[in-house]
Figure 1 (cartoon, one colour):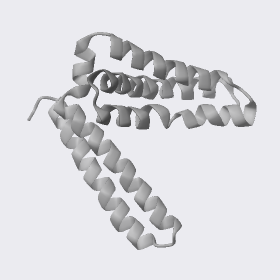
Figure 2 (figure 1 turned 180 degrees about the vertical axis):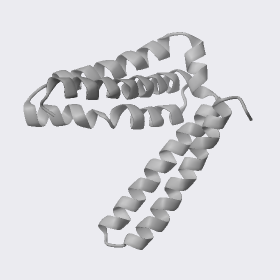
Figure 3 (figure 1 turned 45 degrees about the vertical axis):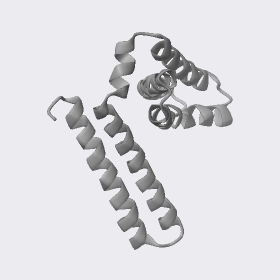
Length: 149
């Protein structure tokens, strides 16, 4: 990923995740609720892998600095900004989306660990079941966010 245009596209897409994760962190900090903060860390900090990789391999700090700035600015804007945005992250539909995302990540992690230990069938069963449960929970949250509940 040495091409400048590829880098701009990648970090442009990741900016959306950092802004969304930072907003959840800001809402959770202001409301003193752990779930939005944990989910915001998953969504907002995990993609920083790409910025860290550019620092290690290319000694280029611009991407990581951009990622951190977007995350911190979004968290501060939501924590100190309008109540309406915080309320959106704290509603029941978004809570279900957050729980579903965390369950999907947990299922993927369980599957990867079991596969790494050589138990492919158990990896598929337990990891897949956890991921599917999370996906259903995530979908129910999206359904509630649409106002159809």
